[in-house]
Amino acid sequence: MTKNDAFLKDVNDGLSQNPKYISSHYFYDKAGDELFQKIMEMPEYYLTNSELEIFKEQSMEIIESFNIDKNQKFELIELGSGDGKKTQHLLRALLSQNYQFKYIPVDISTNSLEVITKNLENHFPTINIEPQQGDYFQVLDRLFTSNHPKIILFIGSNLGNMEDEVAKRFLSKISQNLKTNEKLLLGLDLIKSKEVVLPAYNDPAGITSSFNLNLLKRINTELGADFDLENFEHAPEYTEEEGIAKSFLKSRKRQSVYIKDLDQSFEFRENERIHTEVSRKYDDEVLKKLLLKSDLEISEKFLDSKNYFADYILTKR
Image (cartoon, rainbow, N blue to C red; front, side):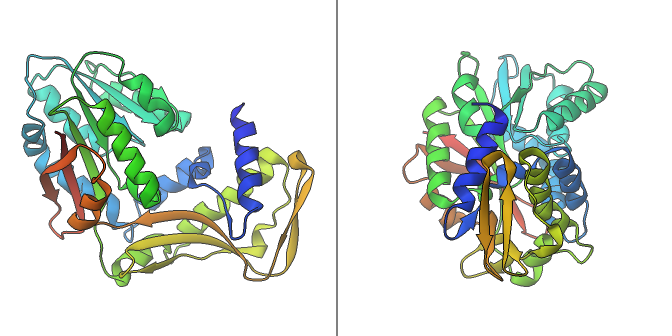
């Protein structure tokens, strides 16, 4: 199955359901990557700066929590590496302390991998880097073939884009592949008030709206659909009690959308929504529930100055 075949199948499956949905994986074409970079620079999008502060201020403490031998080569595997802006602080500290490691960034976006590889090689000419393109679940098995000790990075609260049951399976799968005392550094957005969280997904400049609507533009371009973007609007929601932010694309009117590559039309009622993204927020108790069926346990926790974000060190028992 080609990349476009998978996209076509997932769009067909999602739009055929009630309620409709499309996976957030498909946000990230070249335009989507660029829009997400703009989102991360928004003052309302506190997630990036909160975790960036942790990496800037506490990289040495994080490295100490890894409990790794300086003289033993290890693999630092980052799932969903993005642009590497935060990770480069950790890499700089590791290199300055002469740790022996290979950095393996993993991302579904080929464009992101090309950008991070070029940037890091420019910043750190001696770095040993081996990018891997693919979906986290698909790539995991082939990442654990060597005998070198592993440290896994999964930051940016990317776990929050998974439903809880999927997150449990994901953490369990990582745990199964890790050896005793190996670590997972897991960056998670903490549960906060609606006044702080919602603007990060609904900024007044409309960048998050453009990011969400770009998904329909991509379906038009790659699958021959005729979505009229003016007939849909970005519709996010968040409640502190549930601790989950959700993004939707809402149909402004009753309409029909034709997808050429499927030779099929999909009907939309006025105000009918397509669910495009979930962004779960966490605390210690939520995380512990997700870890129940794994052999991972919380061994350290690093917080930013506002207690908005946490980088947890999880250790394999």
